[in-house]
Length: 492
Ligand code: GUN
Ligand code: ZN
Image (tube, rainbow, N blue to C red):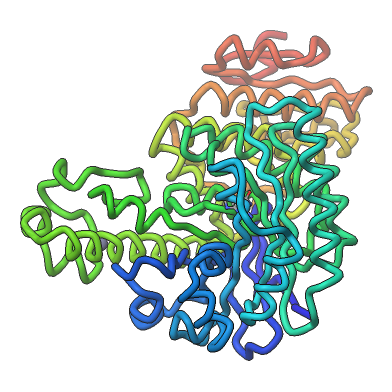
């Protein structure tokens, strides 16, 4: 059996350790499993292990099965012998080929048995990746097939390895959630979220957020989750914040073949670069010109290595961010890479209740870096707290008075709103905020005042609203008195 321990949490993300049968060293998650195509040796598994020391690799059992020489060698030496490495190896089943080409010439039991025979560490059945646009009925029928194949695989897979149970369901959140619930009892230990590659290649990251949250809501929160085919470093922080623990990708190699250079801010064409913005060994020893002049195989190998360097660098940065409680700040920065990433970040914050369940109550810092930060789970959670505060008598929020025995004076701090005495120095009110607020910060502050008013029906609340936009004023309940400029009693 496997073992997954979570050590640090941030948003819905976590740093954990996944131990596999037969391997002493656990995988530290979130992590990236580079995809190895055993037919291509531009950058072989041995070179990747030597240079990057990955937690594990992923390869395709169907590709091995289909080629006589690879199949014979894998059956004789195991998949570790075939690739020449002893790190954990996950195998995929050919589902992706099924989705691409419509048919494959192996059945589920056969390819699962083959994965056992070649001693894969994590086996995968032939799930059916339903494309994003498919109808509910088709997605439901595909899902039924997938679940039956997971059950059949579970009956075959022994204790020396783990079974992965892909979560399908197309773009139908209710199906994704029921798929997540259905695989809980399947005997599988790792849960990849499938059929998301088309969403990623089309930059439909907000739709991806929806699919992942729906699947996660069905899955056991303690289970390790893999995001199938996620390999662009631009999206690791977002995917980790959603609660994905493993990524795999051929992107490093596929992009390299196309002379494309990965960065955390998106993909660049090699010929559009005059300098490398990266300090990896490839980028320090070469220039874009020298790479352009290199022969095709060398260029592809060098670009693949750079692409893996930025990918692993980002994985380490994501883990560090989770450990320090600033993953959402990293997601916020990555959201600036592309409007579709910004959309995804906003979509994630729309589901703040999902994030709030696991987001730590106390962190070191909260940096207010964009108007999106007004929608962070900490702000919503604080507002929930305000609505339970239950003030009575006179409450004055904002500048202008000194507290007396009959007046409760509260500071007003966008995006949080009123700060009851004594709470000033507690997280998240310790947030670092700019002097110049955006309207979302004022709107959130108004929601804070409204939450306080909601839970304090007998209190007489006055709030100073200097500089507030109409959109914030509109969020205040009518029972709250507003004053502008200075002493709230000045107008009496
Ligand atoms: N690789 C990328 N997407 C998928 C998927 O949905 N299923 C499987 N098995 N592999 C994938
Ligand atoms: Zn580089």
